[in-house]
Image 1 (cartoon, rainbow, N blue to C red):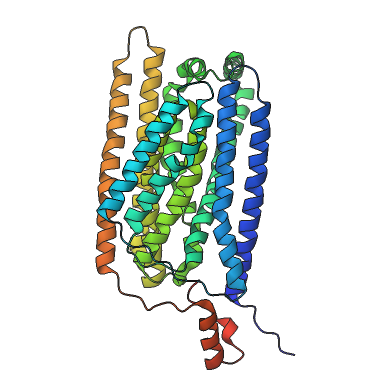
Image 2: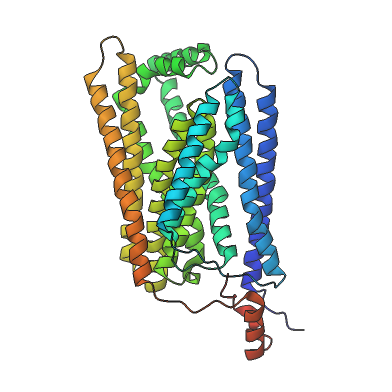
Length: 435
């Protein structure tokens, strides 16, 4: 009896089913844990803790639901059911304006309701997910509309893997780096009594700060955070190491797709989806932690989402160019550009925060240098926002004009029947083109 090779597309879909199932299970467990700890929170600042935990739980529930299409479509593919091609039309002006206006209304209503009373965040929770999701949808539509794409299953899978897998991988690596740094500091402190005393002093001050009192905590830590050596270390981590980690892991699924992508334009679309998945998880978690600054937090996530989606789209274009056309120079340039955009963005945020902390520590006399740093940081952020906001639709327009029309995709069962009729007994060796 001759054993037939296990079809590649079956292995891929089984792995997708396993990933989606484990992801949904993990997110639901995290959701239950956050609800439990949120409801049981008490003491000073318990309202803020409840808001953060329960909004984070809502975020986990939403992310679990986003993995469902990936799971269902992968199971359908395994059952040899047809998977329709994805079609993302170019966005029209009225659609752009309409979605933007809806988002503005969502932000205004959420901000007003959340500030009306102590539990206003609970009443405004209905606006929480649209406040994060609408800008991401709008940005992806601007950047990816009209570009060639694969099957619906592919788009949902790329988005889901980036949302859960890439985000988790980046967080673990960043925590690992922080842990190594803390370990090194601990080793140095054991040999340096003065440094050890300083660390113990900081620990005691933080411990004595009232829980949930962010302003007091900032004032307590400001003298240490504004130390030039500390801020330099934060700058290196935020503007160099973090962008390199995140821009490498965000499009991780594209490194695996390889030549299954059909054009650099499709690489840009899938890269933008990778950035959207990462921005979704990061945005939901960050906004839920800033429940007391509801509107400002949501607006800030729009800008960060634009950065993530644009940078990943550029890198996706570079990956496809390298794998399909051996244009490795494009890949190097795209990676450098993506990391630079991300690094300048993070560095500008650090400068603005550093300037604010200097102003806090000199609140009686003011601090001119701190004010200058705040202005420089915010101006840089604004300029980057304008540049990438202008570049994204221009890139989309160029790729749509230069994209070569692709042959129509054949639904999965039909593709299998054709291969079986042309090469009996060996159709399973070749993966179907729609996936």
